[in-house]
Amino acid sequence: MAHRITKEHILNQSKGTRDFYSDIKRSEITLKPRTSVVSKMCSFGLGVFVRFLRNRYRQLRSSVDYGIALIGLMFATPLFLMVGLITKIFSPGPVFYTQARVGKDGRVFNIIKFRTMCVNAESQTGPTWTKENDTRITGFGRILRKAHLDELPQLINVLKGEMSIIGPRPERPYFVNTLKKEIHGYTGRLSVKPGITGLAQCYCKYDESISDVKRKLRYDIIYIKKMCWMLDFKILWRTLNVCLLGGKP
Image 1 (cartoon, one colour):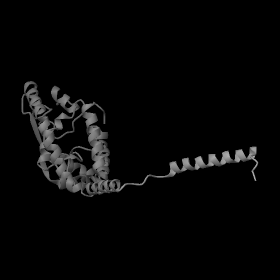
Image 2 (spheres, one colour; image 1 turned 180 degrees about the vertical axis):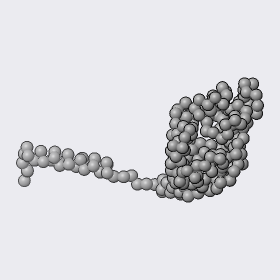
Image 3 (tube, one colour; image 1 turned 120 degrees about the vertical axis):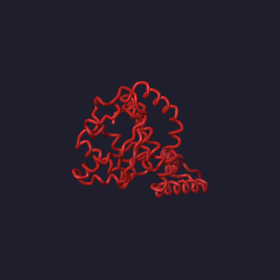
């Protein structure tokens, strides 16, 4: 017996067809492709490698510091020669400047920098913080300081194991002995190797007062508590931005 095809029947069939295709589209959206064995192995291997780096951060850090310092010195050799020549021409005296600084666990070492001040700058004043428009700074020294190039020789301190690439900046014994009496927790920053650059240097200017030191100390303690590869990378990136692109802390 032939069925009578009505308008309602056609509409119902159309509706069923629409529902069918809608179900397919929904399935395409929600259905996830099967992960291949190779993909699983790759993701597992990468995860293991990342966990290995994270867990061995402190052990591997010294090796990474050494590698960066060695490569940095190789590339910076022409710059060292140029800075040395210009310094000799415009400012009689030694090219390099060494000064006692306090490192990890209170050990004292000699930090190496390009000389940016006149010879015997503190002979009359004694230990003082450098001011923004300090008259003791030479003309070429001001350029070096603005670009932070005066810190480059500290790569030698890194090779000697006295410093890291990143960490709290080392201070002079005179200031350490004074500040640890005035600022609670100041010696906490001596629990790690001092660095050429650090989190505090990314956000703070040169020390000119106790309040500046306290502000930097907060950043130093934050870094010590949260130090990891990613934070080190961010600090390096920000440091390069300040040095090469003229950004401000």
